[in-house]
Image 1 (tube, rainbow, N blue to C red):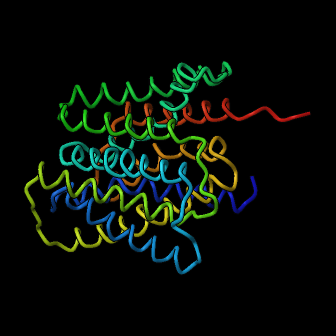
Image 2 (cartoon, rainbow, N blue to C red):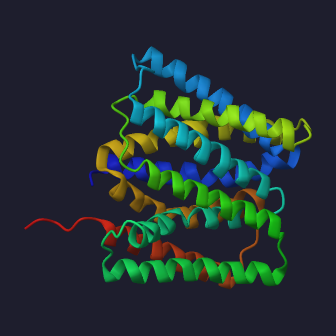
Length: 291
């Protein structure tokens, strides 16, 4: 990878990982589903308008529309919606660890369902990655944790795994920003409908809410997603996913710095094991170099 690609990957991972801590601040002062629906509405409109100014088209192919709809529902509505609900009662660092299991789940499903070849390093990485997550879970469960919030996050990451596997062969056709914006508008529509039936509107205006909401909307919400799509187009999904190995480290570090969330020795060990497992899995899935 060249320096620009590495910089893009690091920037994406840092922005993506920061979203859990800012989301924790948002749900402390606002209804989670309504807040996320408004966030996606703003981000989506900005993305679509920006894309049109860049000359991008919303006349997508059928596979592109399918991918846009699936990701809008599964990633923006289900995955992030469930995480926002769950983070009312669980720590941002724990949510980040659960979300970081995505590449492990994708690799496991690809191996078991689609019969993709996984080298011994990948099998070892899966065992280490899930073992690290289990270690962190054990420490949090022994300390007492809200099981509903935990279940929401687990179902959310399974929804994103399903979406990733379903549209793994879809391409953007160059309309990177347009597709990102449309995905967010799809997610926003779904979340507004869910909020009407499932949630009572609540808002406590604070400076922390305003700053966290603005940052989450513009940085993890729009910029990180745009960088990720560009990275996928630049180096492909398998190589780009290697950068996910940094998410557990960044996620817990930002939660500790921003929210003061404490990490015990076993948590640190679990994060390092999970990080090593994710890296091993991604390296094992990369095609071997031709001689």
